Length: 143
Image 1: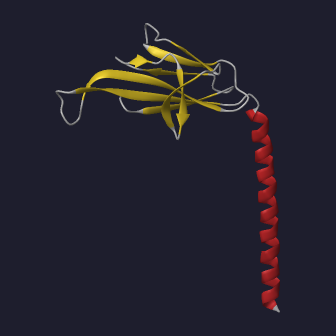
Image 2: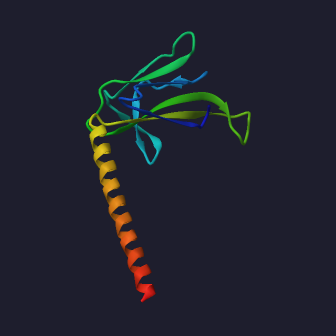
Image 3: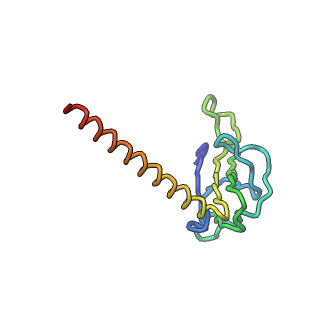
């Protein structure tokens, strides 16, 4: 759809995704992403491979190539030409749909586990402190 942004997250758990660009032209090159939007700067990457469209479904396939050392954001553009403008339907313009792909880092699983266990330790410690404070206040109010 015109002027829409589709977002996919790819990695070990989700190695592929597909999208359609009916009557539009898809960029074969990836573009950089800045502030959640596609830029005009091409980005060289081996993280994602783009194939398609498939003849039967007319879907483009995004598949994980080589996971990067750091998480990456890529953008593929689906461009529509000759779209009537909103102000004057006798004039046409070029419109774009963006497909933003978040690619996980090769070693992201380890850091997630560490972060989760650290967060549990903090929550357990703060929970214990709250219990001790509550007991102190309760005992103190009876004296």
